[in-house]
Length: 500
Image 1 (tube, rainbow, N blue to C red):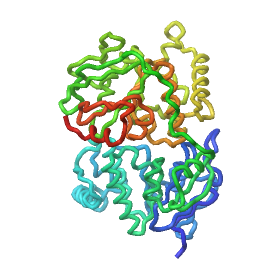
Image 2: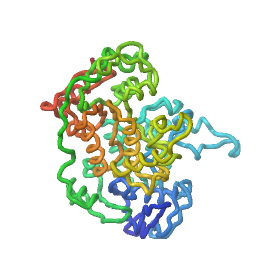
Image 3: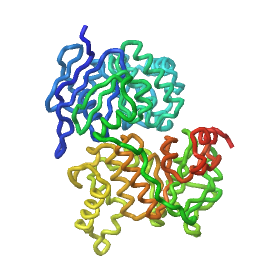
Image 4: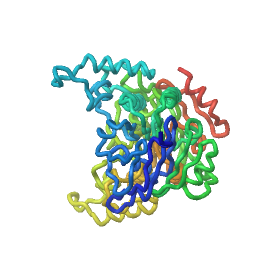
């Protein structure tokens, strides 16, 4: 029996203008959790997509149980016992949970002519019960939250009975309870002799569940170490190639007068946000905390005009705003960075230039009918330099960029409108520690310039590190505010579980 269940050696992969992988490598032992780490753009997801058959390698080899194999496509990978939980969800919202789990593998009857729906839903029920997920197999996937969709994606990978399960940022949308449930599933898979390749930027997770850690940088293999020999500082240093003495930029902003406020702001839906009143000061970073179901995102979408409300006011510089659609908010210099980068942030089939300029095209019209492409190109180039966006050019498709660089493109989109109030919903979700610091620095710089920031985050330490105040929500209501000098995780969690 070979020592390694899987080996990837000398893997190279290039895209137009980008060398994504150069002599990348990975060695995976059976019955272990192997963490794969690196900054955004380090090549982690690209390497795993080569393993799963989404990309074809330009060079390199894959050994499975000591034997060389070729993987033509994802179905071929599944057939060889390799499954993948993707970072960016690709749900089919109008189909059932069962159909999403067994998509492409639906059980058949009548000689393979018809789908055996009875077996489909029975098998799904058994699978969900086995891994402790209390979902109705018949329910449409679109009725679930993002975190619940993430759990369904994990169930889908497990349903393939694979010997190797790739998990790319599997906890990015999960609650603490759901994370614990996932770790229990991973422990069981490990006991069964299966191997997990685990990609995450959350150091505490890696140090808790990983047996070995491989670190990549700029598409290259840096090294592999037993997790027991590593610390957070050692991982960060090897990831970024330099010491990082601070996780958060220094606080130099000075909050001023109140410029934005809500009063008794209430959704048209009874179980959504209710009676929300808060104030936001000039140059302030207001953190928003709460568990899944707290209605933080729904509240911000209501303020931005994406959701209807039945009562209450939004005031900007003392004047009541009538916001019925996002355009009304944009015209009032309010910006919204959405939670789900893939679904509601980027336009994946468009270029970096198009994604930056799309919200401010009216500013670049000749006579109201023709675009001034030279000024748009100048805007994009300025933002690429100012935000250190790693892209071959403005013409590059945004979907080919790393998650952190995609996030910076969306930030630059809104900066082009010079907003006074910038709502950021999970601005660092799914990006590495180096890219996080760059996003934090952008937020801190905006606050220093007098811009007002509302920052939603599920990472309490992030809010404590960045916010001037934290507003805590539970079950659609504000349960309290925490001032900077009294911020700690215990106080925030107590408010986040206090039903009003």
